[in-house]
Amino acid sequence: MGSENRGSKSKITHLRREISLLGSFSMGFADVGADVFVAIGLVAAYAAGFSPLAFLIASICYVTTGLVYSELTVIYPYAGGAQIYGMRAKGDALGFLAGWAIMLDYVLDIGLFSIASAGYLSFLFPILQRNIIFFPHTCLEIAFSGIGLTAFLITLTLIGINVLGIKESSFLNQVLVVLTLIVEALVLISGFLFVFKTSSFLKNFVVFGSPVKHREVFYVGFGNVKNENIIYSVTLAMSSFIGIESIAQAAEETKKPAKFLPEAFKLSIIAVILFTLSFSVLGLGTLGWKGLSEAVYNPVAKISSMVPGVGTYLSKFVALVAFAICVVSTNTGVIGVSRVIYSMSRYNLFPLWFSKLHEVRATPVRSIVIFGLLGGLLALLGRIGFVASLYNYGAVLSYVLVNFSHIVLRGVDKDAYRPWKTPLNFKFRGKEVSLVSALGLVSTSAMFSLILLFHPTGRVLGTVWMATGFLVYVVLRKRIKLPVFGRVSAEKIKPALPVIKTGIYVPFYMPSEKVVVTVEQNLRKLNEIYLLTVLTPEELKVRRYSEIEKLSEETGKSLREACKKLRRRGYRCEAQVVIGERNREVINFSEKTGLDEMVFVGIRKRRGIIKPEKYDEIRRKVRVRFFKEII
Image 1 (cartoon, rainbow, N blue to C red):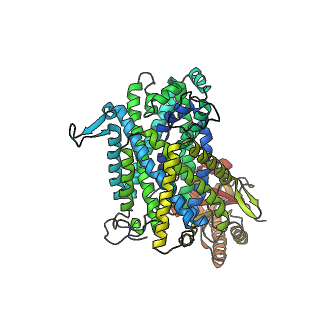
Image 2: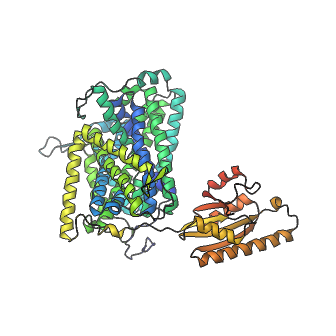
Image 3: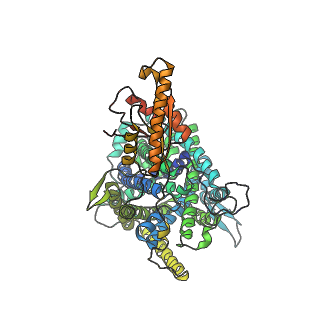
């Protein structure tokens, strides 16, 4: 992994694993959760009262793709995300297209959310809404919007932080995300208690589609203006669910990827959908759809200003927090684009020059600076509608390719170890197929088709971006004498084989032979086994200490014998017998050994071992599974 000493001058060639579960969740929530501060106003401008339903429809793409990412990141915990999965599924060319598409999303993310950050800051400092002129009354006179210039300065600051290191960047994310979660919950509670009007919500909810014809929309003419605005709004609502792939971009820098990555994805999915739908409903019941659309730069702050008594102060505080979370989302864009470029260059999909890491900080400094500045220059435009119309193109295209790759990879790496996989699987012609990825492929493909149809800016500029990138890729591959459509680089990517630390709670009455058979039938040799038996005198009705000691010695001998047999079969195994209160000892054991999961064998059918309701306490500390006892 290279040197871990930050002060060391030795050359570093690998990214460091420094991101915790909170850090991983923060990346996913920051990049997606910040979208609500922008999207609810934009969507309302087109959907009117249909806004909550527009978000609900778009969330299908988000949930399915998020679950697919959750499985794939654990199997391939490398920087690059969609690019890695595309390469492994169908070769280097598909990997490039997936990576190049998601790179467009990240560059636009930097531009969009730095503008959004400046927009919320302008709620506090209205002077930022004016144009700022340099060298007035001269031939060099240059005018920038205050919001655009502020957004550019924010981007420059984040580039500097990211050059310092992922640890510093992740810490910034964590602090601001926790603050945002608290404030968003506060706004929702106070808004629904004191401001929300059911009559206003119902009055607005029945207005399906804005009657206004917008110049950004390419009206195809097969429906009235309202209906086409609704379809357009669904594609914009998708922008509220873009960014969960940021967790995958930092997979190579995440601690305990097999454990933390699936948890981070699931937590992000739940939190984002809850807050997005809640704010959309609250906005209709407070400001109405017209009020939301007029407050496109700072809709959540506008909602907060409606709270009686404290609205003025609360709205300013919310604007400050919204500014902070949008900064975090911008920061996540800088992290994401630099990791995609780093990964693509490392696998000969992009010039190798970009894979250079800082010799002390272990950060892809060249990618950070160059593509961070590209997003910053885009932010100088200060036009949120223009950037948003492009934002969906790259992300949704990459989502299509990720879902497709997942379906293919179930066959390519069918024997790969999957610590977590998508639910709702079935066998088709001898192959395991995921209903989740199938639904994800259909829903994201439909969404991308609508984006091509209704977004002329995205359709033209997005396609130009993809075509230009592919041309660069072809020239590069020809120059370094590698096939354009081969699998040369893809073959370097193998499924990760993480060591899963598995604790197995063995009832004292279970003989060693049954323990060995149970392990062999349920666990692969990737698992590091920790056998545990807890003897509780009260439950065993043993009064003399000598008796419990004798039972402990006999049980320990049986567990050690089981471990000895498991080692002969290729497992790594340790055993321990503890006397004490069962729940507390199980939790202490899991924390002491750093377990990824705790398995209980044959306990469900027997009472008096661990009460069912007690498992919840253990689940809060470690993943819990159950194996049937072998008869």
